[in-house]
Amino acid sequence: MRVAVVDDNAQDRAWLTGELESLLARRGLSGSVTAFGRGGDFLKAARAERFTLAFLDVYMEHMDGVETARALRAFDPDCLLVFSTFSADHALEGYRVHAVQYLVKPYGLEELEGLFTLLERLLPVPEKYVELRNRRQTVRVRLGDVLWAEHFQHQVRVHTAGGGVLSTRLTFREFTELLAGESRFFVCGRGLLVNLDHAADFDGRDFRLADGTRLPVSRDLSGAARSAFGDRLFHRGKGAVL
Image (cartoon, rainbow, N blue to C red; front, side, top):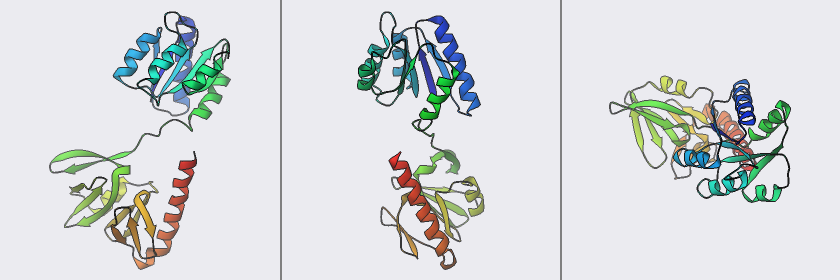
């Protein structure tokens, strides 16, 4: 993720940048922290490439943090905003630009740790992908876009969202090993796999996808399929609540 620190006080800016870099490393979060002394410089960079999270000092010359946040929201509704300030007097303005938190100066590492405990529930999770050879090209396929896959004539045919089909010269075992640890995928039987996130129903014999595709499940795997589908439905529902 990309994190911005926007503060016209050089000392505060350098301290927060350093602490955030250390905090990301301790929590195993991949990302970079970029510091800006002016709101306008931050906005220019944000237009070129979006930031995941931005810390904005409220009291800055030329363009203060609230003005910067309003300008950001005109083209980026998703960046998580945290205001750093000597006073919480601007709470109403923060609500209007959907700031997630205030840090009242002087604050320390304990406040930052508490903030990231909250933010980790809000930060987008990067989608995983696999790289497959298809027609002499290497293609990146998002796991969320995989609907189902089948082993067919010494290849694995991967059916993807939008109706696409990729054929890659892998054994079925090699393909499933690429998905190791992903509970969203269930092997229905010999040479057949389904992404449970795209399964609309399971009737004890077949998975039915949203597009009407039916994928048969081996009789001896029916109980495991029902359990895996139920667990995934719970997971999907829990994610929707959060």
